Image (tube, rainbow, N blue to C red; front, side, top):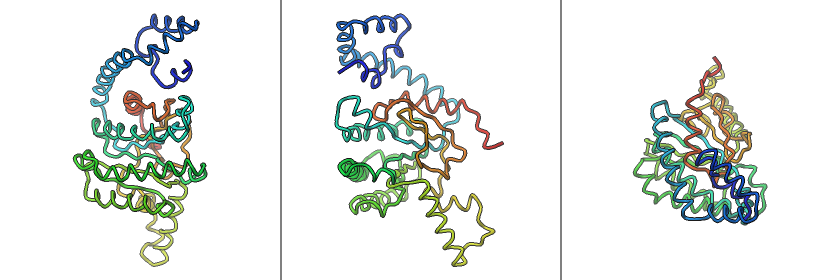
Length: 301
């Protein structure tokens, strides 16, 4: 493995120690022997032990700061960078999706720790159907497996997490629709936390579907034109009954919304992380939340 991918995937010593160590690392990388030593160190148990201990301490301090301020009620995440992460490791592109799936469970745990009530993740967009058949099939199988596994996940039941699968479910294979229905029915009465999984989702499509339903209700006489307001429209969205996202986070360094929650993000704070989704760590999450807390939300005022 070359030095380039290592620097993209693992935190450099520059972020773990002082300038002198950073200078030593730069010096070591100038020779082939130095590069081999640095590479071996990054892959060693000693590196993992040291970095884990340092990161645990830094995360604890950052979490203490966050707890002293207002925590976002709803965080939405565009999980991006799976394929580029796999490519950096020289793995098949589909393997990046498998490496990224565990990160969702981590983020859910981090939300429990901070008291974030609502988490929405962008798992599969309507545009993703345009990818290769093999990749789409891999993603569908992965979604189905994870939805089935969620039904038996003790954390879902212990923390009373209501799971919603939002999107154009009719466009999904029958087995996934059944799995989605089962987990939603199973957690329907839970109300402590909310976990939304966007599958076959598109923001424009969601708005179009809302318009059609509003028009149908007007046609039937169940809704008057004068009654249509932003709050009324919100009740026709997939996220009906939930607060709009306070923070929308996207990984991988891309800075766009990609047709995600277009109605709901009107006053959301946006945060873009340059870390690929499978490499997204707790500190990256905490930094995003802390950055959100340090901003002044004006809501157009």
